[in-house]
Image 1 (spheres, rainbow, N blue to C red):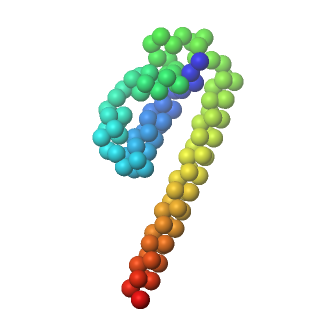
Image 2 (image 1 turned 90 degrees about the horizontal axis):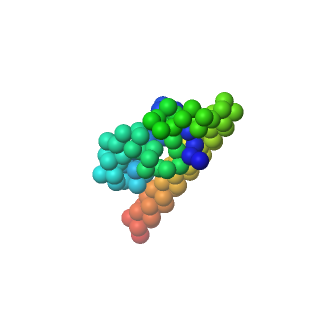
Image 3 (image 1 turned 180 degrees about the vertical axis):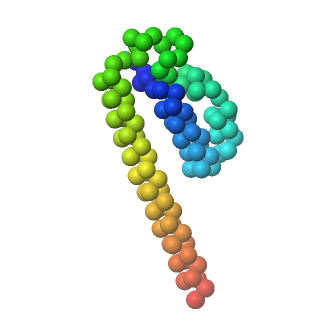
Length: 110
């Protein structure tokens, strides 16, 4: 059964997907495609999430408060992992630029 997210949560994930595709993968065309699709289409394509209150998702399927809290916990964890990944990527980028700069200055002093 897919995770059930509110429209706000799903919208946040969709925005992150757009930013990731555009900024990290450097591919603006698919990012625009994701940005242009509806939340329902995005959820259907993902297949691992459902939209709370969406047509066809009965209240029983939406789950209990405990399930909602579990989803919120998962989202907090995913947010933390995403933030750590961004920091690691940034640090690696800085190291690479410093390494290249060192190679350039070394070549110039020869």
